[in-house]
Length: 272
Image 1 (spheres, rainbow, N blue to C red):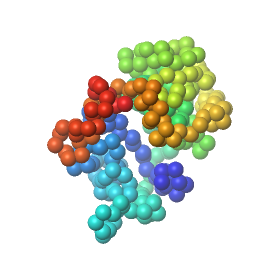
Image 2: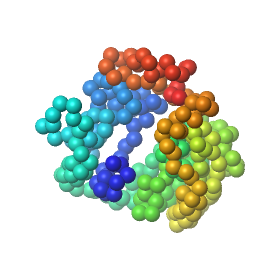
Image 3: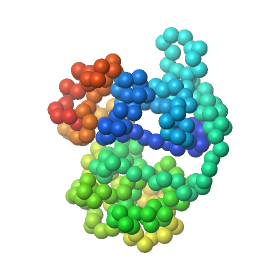
Image 4: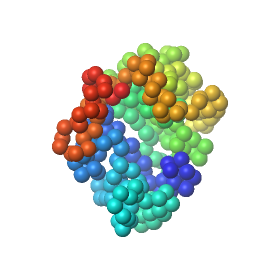
């Protein structure tokens, strides 16, 4: 459903926030509030602009959160068309303020997380290596680019953290650790990657846009879409392991303890 034109059009009237619940305690706790104390790897809810008031129900996905409420037992939730209709109806209650080109630019907790998500979503990652003092200037250059119709929704963005990301270049081919906008292609499992192009911090918005479109064209021509089952099987055979900050697993009964079974498939606290 997320890839349909109708859902994408409806989502344009929302600020889409992705909670990284395995990387951050605050986000983990937010997921529990949406699932009535339980914890699972997906949750969905529509909130008012204050970020607190709920405008919908909550559940594992939009079809459950936006179910009208008169559906029979065992229902899987609202149909795709109902979801889009409900989202559009809720959005009409609010009038947008400000300019889309002045939106907040995406950022991750860490580079390692950004690279892993970029691989999973099969998007290129724009990694901005900049000092804290120069960040506002870099953001100003990126804002109109990331809101551009040819760019929006096609890339991930992450800003370097001086401490957490100081070794970011160790697993990235063709990197030089110099300040700038680094366009990175993640490997199949998001644990390494290679630089496709790097621009200086002095690059204009138009130069950044041009570099992104050219890089994405090359990327799209050679990147094979992943089949979930095959991808997971290959990762297990090759012993691929991603260490998360939060314990791996789900707490579906909401007792505060990770359910047995899911967490025993791997060693340590990370998610395989």
